[in-house]
Image (cartoon, rainbow, N blue to C red):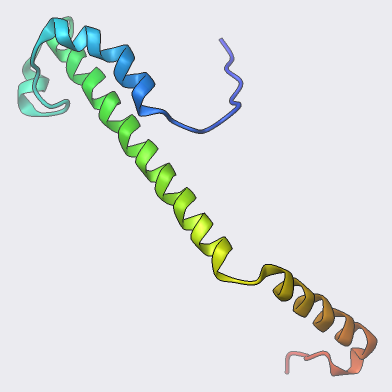
Length: 107
């Protein structure tokens, strides 16, 4: 089976809705990877429920990290006059292109 990735966005709510009915059937479970979880039989639904709960927590972590990166990106974009910076870089490049003898050389 081949999956095409269209977006890397993760939505916690979709995962939560999917796993909640299954988790409600089990009721409670140990933390995935804990000694209590390791001691469970691999066919035990409680062991699988712990993995579904871990997946739900992981998707929440990814979603909150994505939201933080988006907010940081907006903050950075709003902190500078990017048009003025682009003009400055373009003017510097044109200046040195017209005066190649001013270009710095490693000694």
